[in-house]
Image (cartoon, rainbow, N blue to C red):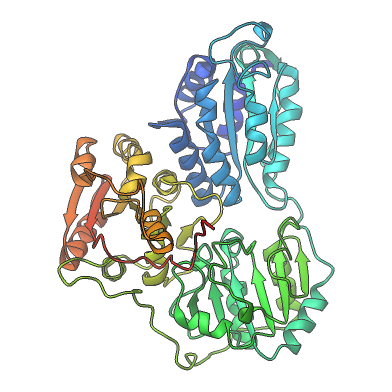
Length: 548
C-alpha cells in the first residue's frame, strides 16, 4: 500500500470533498498543511484573527452545504478558534477545526505555545464547543480519528469537530486511505408522529412557533404546508425569522426580542397547542413570556432532549429526531397540502417601538430602505446587537432561508466572518452582513480579508457610537449605564477605506438606497455606514435586568 505524509492525506481529503477554500492563519506547527494546500490548488483564505477564520469556515459550510475547514496554529492560535467552533455548533454546521501542537516527542518538556495536557490543553478546551475533540498522537491513528470526527459532524444534529495534530505527526508517513463525507447517514425517526397528528387535529387555537432549528434544517416548505393545511398562525423566534415569509397571510410576526405586538397579543389569547419547531425556547426566544401566554399543551420537534420540555411547564409531547424527516412524515400521514388563506384579521404592521427624532435616521427606516433595494434572494447575516433586533422587527423576509441570526452562542462580530465565508460558497447571490459599530471594533478587520480575496460582501453597519443593546438595557432597568458609550466613536467609513473597501456614509433613506444600489454592482467589499439616532430605543426591553 502506498504511504503518504499525514499532511498530504488531509489535503487530499479536502480536495476530494470538493473543498475550494480553507480558512486560517499560519504558524510553524501547521506550515506543512499551508504549503500542501497551495500544491493542490485549494485557496488558503488568510484571515485577520483566528476567530474570524472560524466564522468564515462556518459561513462557507452553511452556504455550500459541505464541510468547512478552519486551521489554527498551536497555543493561542488554537484558543482563538474556540468562538468560531461555538458559533458553528449553534448553527449545526459541520466544520473541521484543525490545530497544531509542537512535536509529540517533545511533550512533557517546556515548549513555546504548547497545546498538550501540560499547558493549554486545546483538546479539553474545544470539548464543550464541539461534538468531538481529540489529539492525533500517532500518524496511524489519523484514519480512525478522522472517521470518528466525520461521523460526529454529520450525525443527527450536525456540528463542529476538532483534531489537534502535533508537528511530527503531521510529518509522519502512513498508509494511504480515503474517507468520503458521510452525508447520507439515515435520519433519526420518531415513532410518535401519530401522537403529533392527534394533537394538531384536536387543537382549537394552535400556534406554530418556529426557531433557528427550522432554518438550520431548511424546513421552509414543510412548515408552510403544515401552517396552510391546518390554518395555523405562525410566530418566529429571533433566530427563526428566516424560516417563514413575513408577508404570508398566516404570519403573526416575531416573538421575543424584536417581536411584533400582534404576536404577543395572540400568545395571550388562550393558546391550546404550541407547536415548536427547532427552538430550544431559550430566554432570548421567550423574552417577555408571561404566565398568561402559557399554552395548554406543547408539541416540540427537536433533535436533542437536553433542553426539550424544560422551559415551558405545560405537558409536552416531544417528537425526537431529524426535524425535516419527521415533519415530512407528519405531512405524509395527514395528507396535508398547501391551501390559500386570507390575511389574519387585524394583523399589525411591524413598526419601530418608539418614534425617532425627526432630525435623525431611525434604524427601522434604514432597514426598510435596505429591503426596498435588495433582490429577494439576497442573504442576510445578523450580528450580535440591537441592530439585528431592529432588522427582526423591520426587515421583511420575501424568500425563506435568507436571514440568519444566532440566539444562544451570540458572538459579537461573528456575522462579519460568516458573510465572507458564505459569499465564497454562494458567489451568485448578494450577501449582506448587518452589524454595528461595536461589532466592527471586535472583528471588523476581517473586511480586509474580503478585500484581499476579492469577496464582494455588503457590510451594512449601524453606527450610533455605543454598545446600544447594553446601554439601553442597562439604562432602562437600572436608571444608568456604565462602560457602554464610546467617548470617541468609530469612523466606520474611514476604517473601511483604510482596508481598501468601498465605503459610504449615509444620513438619510435616499443615501441608504443609493449606497446599496452601488454596492450591488460592485466587485469589491462595500461598507455602508448608516448614522442612526443614538437615542432610539431598540426592541429589546423585554429582556429585563435585575440587581436585587
